[in-house]
Amino acid sequence: MITLTVRLALIFVGTGAYLGVAIFGQGGLAAFFSHGALIALTGVLCVMVVASLFAGGNLSSGVREDCGNRGVLAAFALVGLLDAYFPAWADRNDFWIIDGETIRWVGVVLFAADGAPRLWPVHVLGQRFSGLVAIQPDHTLVTSGVYRFIRNPSYLGMIVTTLGWGLAFRSGVGVVLTMLLIPPLIARMDAEEALLKAWFGDEYEAYRARTARLIPWLY
Image (cartoon, rainbow, N blue to C red; front, top):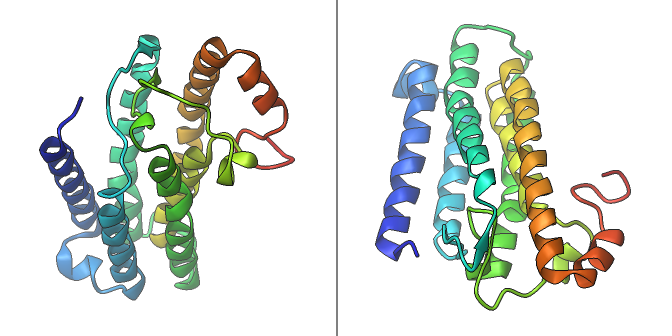
């Protein structure tokens, strides 16, 4: 079980490094913070980090884990690193840019709006929410709230916040990186659903039959 101190360190160091890479890609502090939208983006990111401190979650393998899915975390990390740098770099170099300052603010709004779907499931599940594909002790199937409609609200939030981040830099590269995030996410969802079906049986099958994976009535 990851300790609170280690968790806090990972959150703050990881966020600082992510933002630092983006600032470097943009050409430094002055260039980055010369855009009102990027200042707002940074503010939203900081709020999300503080909110995450109270959301719970862990990296425990619990009582049963699909260890074969751990490689997906490396894919998430790689896309995240690329997403931190290349949209900012593209913005600075006018490479494959979606013109207009309005698109920056569209990106900030998307990033902020889907912060809640990204973090709320972690808050609801608490210590049952793991960064690994794992069943936790006393794990129960949550089917209320947003889970009444979609089975993976956190992953939907991840997709939209990644897209919002890229658009805040007016970056077509950011859109492509968002698309690259989808295959490992699908692999992750496949692994989670197989594990939940094996653990909860017919209860999970009934739940899956009446809900969408990510977008109600579409997928």
